[in-house]
Length: 333
Image (cartoon, rainbow, N blue to C red; front, side, top):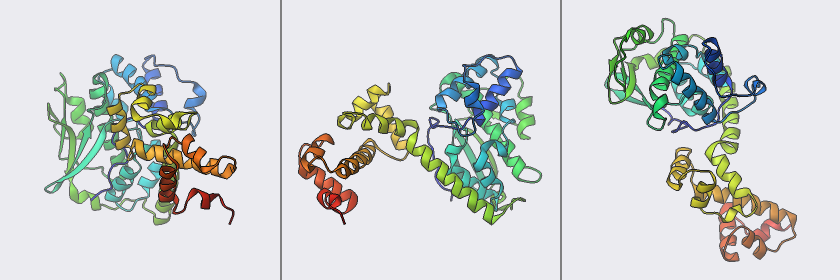
């Protein structure tokens, strides 16, 4: 029904708009946060690791544990930059949801979304299982409130929720939750979720424009392509493999250098839609092209530098990548 969410873990690189919003919220309430240079926060092209934003959120949650809903209402369609404009110009709510999932790594979400049809309802679930416990409730409330705020800006009259459930115990006073979502909240549920009539997906958006949405989607595609290649866990693994001698490292050795367990590394790569073997092949291919273009080393030496035990293995792999042998690739014309 929908595209699969582009990210399945909170650890992906982000723009600075989300961190800027968190920082401004904290300053208003005199909550000190881990220091981030002001020139980074104000640079629209800057990128920050998710761990940096998470550290700020954890500091805020420690001082203001009940502020997640209020912070979530600060997120607007325009907070999300090009993704926000792609959403605004989508033809229907369903199309807006689809484009959001495809380019979710242009958002600031920490709780991974899952959508499923439940009879006549569409149920939107948030998975916070990978988050540190001290930030879980805060981020569940923030993310769900942000989603509800944004959808309310898209549709005249807002999105009518039929139910909202939270995967944590009820607070002493649930009136803020009732006011934020317009329904009586349920607490202590198995998963945090919200539901609305699936028919709402067909509602046209008032600012729909086919030319604008096509342009915005293309810009989103270019942004995420560059970001997915250079940053996050996949980028860190590529950097380790591309370093001198790095191509000979195994997954366990790379994981140790990145201060994570091998199983964690493999899981994160799978969540990013790749694997250690695929990344190693990518790096090997890039290095092979450089070495072949230099024209200095014989194929046997290139194979050794790329960590192959014998030339035949390298020749076979290169032929699989390109459709021709290394020698044919090197020959002019």
